[in-house]
Amino acid sequence: MTFSSSSCDRTASARPVDCARINHAALSVLPLLLQRWLPEGRKEGREWVALNPCRRDRHPGSFKINLHTGRWSDFATEHRGGDPVSLAAYLFGLSYHDAARKIAVMLGLEDIP
Image (cartoon, rainbow, N blue to C red):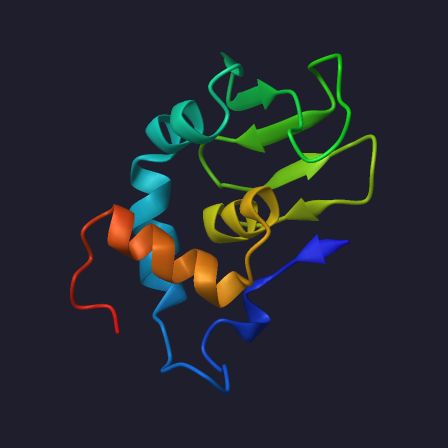
């Protein structure tokens, strides 16, 4: 399952959100976000390697996030995405739009609707 930004700026119950801006801001602090979201993980080169908390993962190595692009994948499953917002949506069981709004609040992007 791939998580994408296609539903970010069109949601029936909420105003549009600038997902590109939120992803850009999240990328600038991605290592800090990952330490918070996946504290058991570790940096390996250009990637954050962690246990996937969304499944019974016992061995780090299959769940990786690129620290420069935000692309992520669980190579043991079909779960993957292309940015920090999609990762948050996956990890916390949120819609892409809701994950974007929560990251915006977390990062202090107060002018995001």
